[in-house]
Image (cartoon, rainbow, N blue to C red):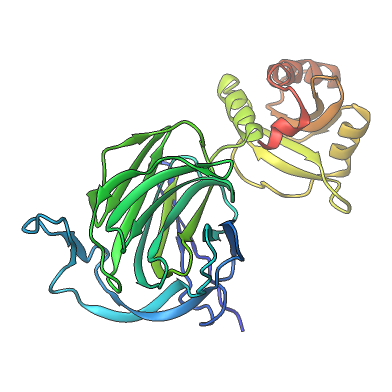
Length: 360
């Protein structure tokens, strides 16, 4: 049976991409596919499963009650509900200093907006849940979490396994109530929202510039999450940026492609191109020869010349093959084509430092 579970909605608006984590077709009472259970502190990773629960249909079904001076987060009175999927942490491990985490995929996000709805169901020792973000590993991340017992919503940083003093407000949460949590990161600025409203003033911390996103709980807390989505600007790797910048500097180029070595049988694969097409495609035997021996090749066509030349690292060793696509000129010779391509290669070469930089 086929059941796609990690739905990527590539809605490009103003350069942003939206990724929705949709487990509506995943088997219930089983771990959510595409995610990884981990644990910060002591104890075992939590028990994360896909389940069904009654959830308000509105994306923001809760408001901060202005009439209640205690700052109680109360559900909207007219909220309609439906049975839908959720991801729950259901293990009841009471180990001290125990923080179950569920990594949502393995992608790292720099600037992003992440939104989820959550509810804290129960817990004898603790009733705490939230989101960890810019996660480097289980000992380095930021976290925003709600606490039913203490009636607080806090942000703090975990660095090398040590927690910084929490920052936040007194906010009363009730078990079994759904709330919406939004995390926005732009550069060093962090904004947190509860049910559509700022939970605290903007924060600023330069420690982690990017990282994974994870659902997070503490101790024996049972908590559910649904409607998880992240909007982010995809990071352009060095190779693609190098090609884009070179195409801009030489607007008469018909095209530019960059190939690196790959395991057999492909031999090489494309990692960047001027038109953004063909990324990941296998190269030709000549591309591998250019990288291996540092030679160059020329292909002639009626409307295009393709000169393939080596791109070297700072030690002078060829690490990539560059296909430079030129418009033919009258009396074009092989040597003249190579001379025309050399400035393009030199421009790219000046920005090269080492082979690993190409895919960063």
